[in-house]
Length: 497
Ligand SMILES: Cc1cc2nc3c(=O)[nH]c(=O)nc-3n(C[C@H](O)[C@H](O)[C@H](O)COP(=O)(O)OP(=O)(O)OC[C@H]3O[C@@H](n4cnc5c(N)ncnc54)[C@H](O)[C@@H]3O)c2cc1C
Image 1 (cartoon, helix red, strand yellow):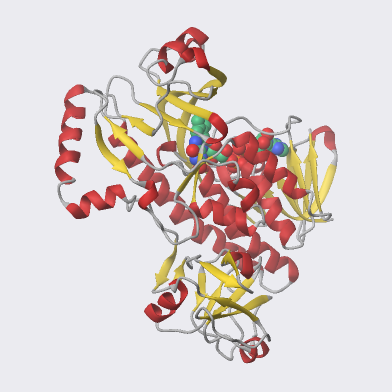
Image 2: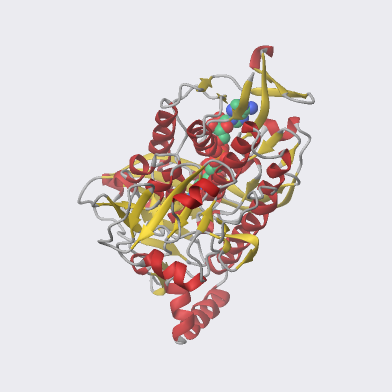
């Protein structure tokens, strides 16, 4: 019997299996398609996503093939910039640039290669889930052709039309956005004329998004107008006409042109006993904030450590309830922000667009508002519901030095809990009554410290400042790097939700 079956090896399923693999969970991944990896759909990811790839030990491999844009511009019908996000001025403290563009097939290939590291993780392609039978202590999954496989838990990461969700009797609620979009992906020859910046074209006649992407790719998305036939829109002549204002069509090779309709949907529950949903199987959102996939990656980071604790017998099954309790509100907030951004972006009449441009220009004369837009402060920050002070916030990830080498903090913390701070010493480790954890002492640069436990030098002072701000010298971090506690007491660490 497997500990877990992950249904679907899209980006969320593949990452989930990597995170389970890193925690020693015996996992089977089943993927219906036989092709090597998916089509380019998701295009951007944020600093949190990179931090999650890092937890899976795959950050360098993923980041190598990304492109971090410097600016994102909102332009009106006349091509005038009326708002700008200065991405190269933003540092949310998580150890990565706030936005990266990637090529989804390249990303998925890297995530699948990551699975080869784990002998206890098996990927089977060309077969998919068709049904589920629940038992008290396990679930039987029926695959194509009637084969049955048992696992203690089933994680449905099988996308928007999730068969896992249907088999578990879970329904979706929400709204669909009736406006279909044409998404064109392709490769631009070096030196060819093209719009070189990331641009939301808020043209009331036809809203569009254009941007250079990773690995010489270019993405252009165009809203379909009333009455336009989706099939006719993917015709090469139509694609050529639409892309011509943004890229030299004679030096652009289209790799994919496809029409999508976006949804704003959420599953009524994300857990039904031993069956759990992640990614698009649990929620779908409009793309204007580039957070659909990122939200699925956060699901994987939140759920996998919980499941590992339960499977090891270190926590009660109730720990799994915390997954939806924490992830649902954040996902809903992201989706709503995306919908609101869409309203600004998608104004569809000349008068409304003129008012929008004028209002946005006027409010940005207030320095605080201008800064909030320019520095992307409207993006929901990572925080758990009921956050109290630092508890429930995401811990920063500055660089630290270990043995004279500068590394991002998480590289030192590993895949489990971590107890970190200037006050951490061998007594902390000996007195610890909690789950498997790594103990890391933080010292100022150049400090001599005993070699009894891992010691990191706080090279830029960011950790020292954090501990001073929060009036503590120790912090307990969950494996997903949220702050669990700011003290280590003599009682066992509670892992109830
Ligand atoms: C045009 C477009 C642009 C987007 N841009 C962004 C963006 O910039 N940033 C962002 O974060 N998100 C973006 N998104 C959203 C993003 O693409 C999705 O949220 C993401 O792909 C979801 O990943 P997933 O792994 O949950 O599902 P999927 O990618 O759909 O993967 C599901 C996998 O499950 C497999 N499967 C299905 N049924 C079964 C079964 N019964 N058994 C076994 N396997 C099965 C499928 O073959 C597939 O491989 C965009 C979406 C679109 C359409």
